[in-house]
Length: 427
Image 1 (cartoon, rainbow, N blue to C red):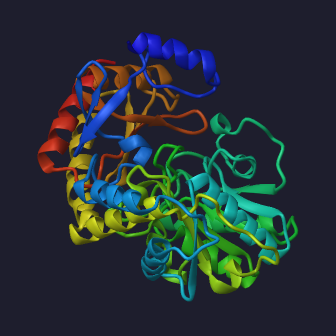
Image 2: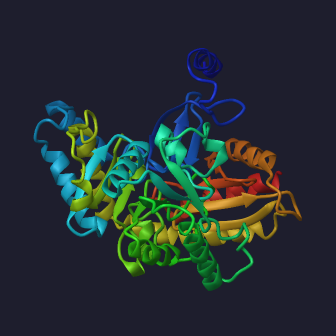
């Protein structure tokens, strides 16, 4: 049955629509932190639909909210007042840390970043954007244009002039040998030099932890230091929280808070986990920025009632059950367990991450050369052992990405670590 579905997939869908595994997997249902395939095999899910199933599969509170809302009305567009949208916007605005915040809902993180770029360029009257090397911001034309990851950027054509800054990757590149303070100073000096050679950009867009790039991040405080430079010049700071938001990193509710010394970002984008699988994205910005557009706009599907009901129920569950705290506690145990394993596996260059956002970088033993074949081997062996993980990495890197639902238990973390250990030892 799966082979037949794969053949049908190949016949009607694009060749560039990537699938994991030599024998692609059809997931039919899930519960908690587990999913099942069409053959009835059960897997512990350590990737959550690319960090999207944030709380749990088939979470009763969310499925009930969706069913009840669907029984009333599914959709009406933003041309009409929408109570669930207003209620979720109020909660997101309050949680954002941005003063006088306004919220606009979209259907994805790509569309959220697209909107942020529109707002920043319109507000600043500039089409120049600063972005980070190794970054990823989505698959739309404008988002691809600012993505600093060749593997996810299929064209050099763009409506934007993009300038790439150092700092998103701590352990590679020309500043990797420096200590944290000197690393930040060097990146700030690079930014200042770059700004001396160009007209003032509209904004810097940055992921606090680079997701597709392999869960890399700078030392705490880098973006605070950048913000001081940017603020002096009126340049906006956009924090792409599509993967880092809602407490996944454990230590903070938003990734930018590790860099909050100079105040919050001007714009925050979010998506993925807030819907727990429903299509929700969004932008939070100060009112003067959000309201700068001088033409009408709507969103046909952004903020639709059924997704907003899911988001409200999911956010309530997250906060009431302190899943941020759980991500910190269980994620910390999982990272230490994987680091102990890595010390005995020559292919593992580094285990890094925060909370339940963990990267395991693989290289050829004794070198810094990427080992994509090793990553593929581990992906397959982990699946055979009943564990689903992701892959990522930027320039010449290969990384396993681990991001389970944030309700992961200690026992499940131990189980997953044991399966991953066997898979790593199989390289």
